[in-house]
Image 1 (tube, one colour):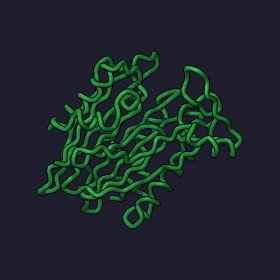
Image 2 (tube, rainbow, N blue to C red; image 1 turned 135 degrees about the vertical axis):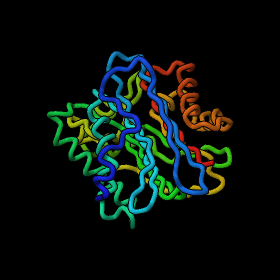
Image 3 (cartoon, rainbow, N blue to C red; image 1 turned 180 degrees about the vertical axis):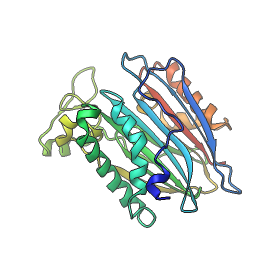
Image 4 (cartoon, rainbow, N blue to C red; image 1 turned 90 degrees about the vertical axis):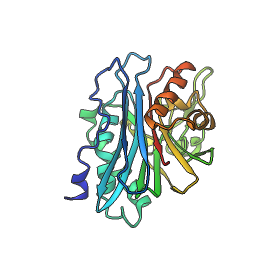
Length: 286
């Protein structure tokens, strides 16, 4: 079976755009002998009046006799269609790159660009919205590769220390690049900085009307999962707006079940009055 066909359906969590009154949740575990890697995820809809716009991928897959852990958070805006499309296609596109096994960073960057191009071509069907993304690929339980655009975040806990692996692509930090492309960043009292007065992130998939001033180029980083690595947290900004990296890792170090850990982090954010959609994946390495 081709690498592209293997991942035609990556849907541990599948939301079809409907509004659910109950949280979505799930778990899974690695089949690698001698390792005890597990994942769990949890999602809740925010207090906005639109449909749920967060999507999650959390799955282990065998590809070319190597186990891959595939984890992602897609946080849509102005509709859920782009995030839904990413959930179904982005990992396929990454694995289809011929560089995947020899130069995974290049494969991820190319796949992000190709996927964004396809989304823009399908704008008539997918709508005018967009999505942020953070993806993590765990290779053989030992090598972790994280890519992201936007403000969903990946945080690795090693020996109790929170290490942010992703980059928050905020308009204020990329202001000069946006202005060089002919755009502008608004900074209004009581509001966050926005690209062209509209979007609160500087990089995203989709957003056709803003694409001249936005980037879909991911930051990509690698980490080795050694004996000091405890767990990885992926979450949308609904968590990170109210919970710091270190607070998040401290809050779940004592929780052995990653599904319960992801639920605990979301409950923590809700207790702090987060009103956004919140999605969270926790991958426990021991």
